[in-house]
Length: 384
Image 1 (cartoon, rainbow, N blue to C red):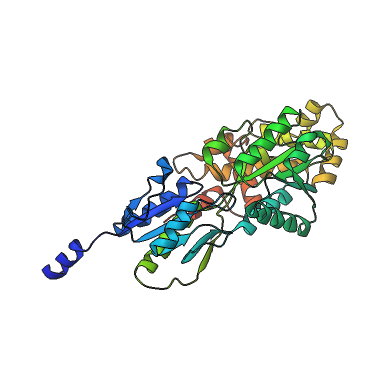
Image 2: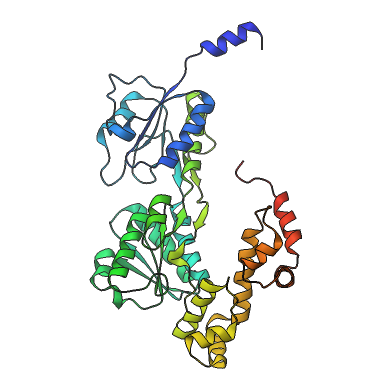
């Protein structure tokens, strides 16, 4: 770079961007902040702590990333957007606001992912429980029910008031979803207070994947990861184009959720037969121990042939197949640690020796543990 261009670059004014959200999500902020750092923006995010919106007379900025809300929109923020006539990227799906461009959550996919997850767990009955009459909740609910019906499940829509009257009135086993993690934990509390077992009788899925909230729940909560950091980053990227006088490739950009973070609230398979359900839970909880099918039958105190027949009838596979599957899946996780010896992987997965691990692993996956470990070591870093 020659000296003239160097001075032009360092002396150009830094852009000032206001981050003003009706609801605050730190991961959105992290995505915006990452892009802002790349562009040397001055990011005004004081609203995160003060909840105060700057007046037009005191704010001198170049762009806004905003979510005014839809049930109780922040009027001063809307007035600022309209009066400032600066490029504004909105994160608000619903409502008629003067945004130059939008970057949005995919509410339909969020709802359908919840239903697909419950379908994968063999549920035949599911319900979406609504807490408020708002368009985000309705969009997720509609998508959840559509996907549930496509997956062959019977779906019910309930309000929280209807649900809370008598949680035990629900058919069981059943899978539930709520609009977000906070609402899902309220469902969980009501179920547990009523003496229902989560997830054995009622499996629960939330959305937002708020890690502290999900991990700290009485039963850790499974949740859809809505990809908030990507939403923030792409919103800032769109604003950058607008502030440069360029058009965004699309006026509305929808960001797909990452997927589902599975925790204990859905760590089950819906089984209508209580003996088969107990056997499945024993396999999931005790696979690391040197147990076999006869040990499980003895523990439940039922004839082994009856238990095997019931298990295969309701789940479509044998107890031995499930025991091997769970052990192999655990071994796969352990194999990501390159320092862990194969003997240790075997013992911590319920196999009596590395030989038994290798044989079961190869039958299940078509490859050896060593080859599997090499293959995952070659995979590109998906986070980069």
